[in-house]
Amino acid sequence: MFFFDSGFILLVLPAMAFALYAQSKISSTYAHYSRLFSRSRMTGGQIARTLLDAAGMEGVPVEVTEGHLTDHYDPRAKVVRLSSEIYRNGSLAALGIAAHEVGHAIQHDTDYAPLGIRNAIFPLAGFGSRAALPLFFIGLLFSGSIGFLMDVGIALFLFAVFFQTITLPVELNASSRALALLGDGGFLEGEELAGAGKVLRAAALTYVAALAVAIAQLLRLLMLRGRR
Image (tube, rainbow, N blue to C red):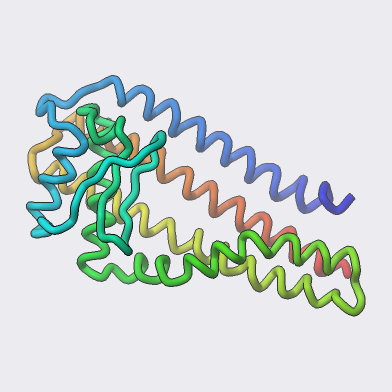
């Protein structure tokens, strides 16, 4: 019954409910502002290219990638990848998201420390998030000679929690840069800029929710460990 223990009910379930709310919020906000277009009529791809060039990053390409809202900056290839709906669309949502990814590219170009830390721990955080819970519950089930696996699982999960913690300021900073770039460059103004900001803030809420789920799960593991 430890899969539905008190820690899961009191900590993890509320955090998961918050995550569902955050996902609903970004979906509805994106849907609304993807129907409102800027007066400039520039597309997300054009905005990304213009902002990169203005930052002296002419060598960073802007490419189209498959999928829905799969937009990202790849620091290894040094390329901004935008989903087709963002690259070819001139909505307020598209411009905000495209500028956000440029914000990440500028972070990388200027050696923004939190981004460097996040990129460095990403492989270990990914492994930790996959292996931590199985190892922990094996140690919990077969306590004794392999009970130490609970501690190994908790240690690995700490990397996942730290990754989510460092991700939040990275994403918030990229959004701040994006809005400044769009506003200072005159690409969006007034209600247009406010609309793009709402999209980016809704997206940021998903990262807050991911951190909340990770912390709740860590506290749950510590509670279970303390009972043994």
